[in-house]
Length: 269
Length: 248
Image (cartoon, rainbow over all chains, first blue to last red; front, side, top):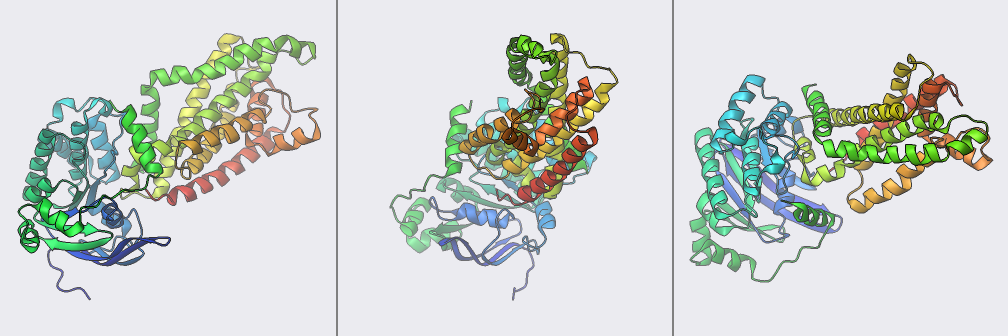
């Protein structure tokens, strides 16, 4: 039975995901309060992306319960999807359309009325410093600009929760800094809950209110950055992380996706 | 509804904006027209069957529509991981609407390609038996486009990498083209080929197109339209089902 559910945007209880005889997510539980920025840290193959996919209706859990803003996303898919936005690890923009068109398309798919769509698109594009390029094709954008556009787009339908899967991977420090400033601004002004996965310790440290560290499909620790450092008697979050997950390398096996990703990187501007 | 429209529109925008792509994709049919049309022309004439250019032009139009529609469905493979498809899969829109918008968009683009090739054929010397034939021809072009756009969507929902794409192109699409009577008459073929060509949906499309344009029918018009219509419904259902099963 859930305890008083006021103000908890995300609740996960005993979540499990198995693929055949491999268990990617082994019975994890956590809660995220409304307006919180929550980071999932973990090495490669820890199960972060699998978890986020389950939270965003892209994968069905093997067992366990998920509640997003009081809704079960496996049952009320459309309503749940209306309330969250997601920025994937790999770009999901339409390269052959302009920034504005991408925003507009998203707005139509998320049932944002035309007037609101136009006003909010303008506001977000200006906030993320893309307004002067609104009529340029996305394929002409740099990596940082594309990311900013994706995140701007994610906010368009005023989601209650924004999921960010490794949002700053591959970006230079200036872009990363800019991006987080804007995300934090929107988090504060619109009370959007932000759930992110990342490798970048310093970002998680600076940006997240609370952090969960995941390894081998389990959550090994959760709490604020200060709590985690105390718990492991480390000076930095990175130290805490390494203490909790060990220093051995994690080699993911290459799959078809990795192959496609490599090809895309070859052809990227 | 808005979702279907905007996804359909998206396919069209992509097509219209890719000038180079349009020219390139017209190259292959032109090559067939020139090389085979004029090359095999004398032999065909000698065999007493008239102008080969007249005969094969509908086949070439059918080929263009086939390739264009299947390709638009298969291009979904790329879109799945690196493009817009993921955005649509996670949006509060039903899979059915997304699939219909995309498939109709792909079919529309294929029809546009077919029209362009028709113009090229006209330039090359092809003449329909009556200009009133054009609307009927369009009907068959649309049917072919829908059948193969749906098939493309079905395949695109299932294949996961570039190897799959190559397999499909070489072992499905090319045989469909070559075994359809696009390039040779369906009459007087041996038993085996007669049987195989009847299994090929494109056969009925090309025959319908050829019948409409130069009044050279092998099957009855109603048979062609009926078979294509039925197959279209089957493929659309298959495409919708497989598309709904995609786990991004």
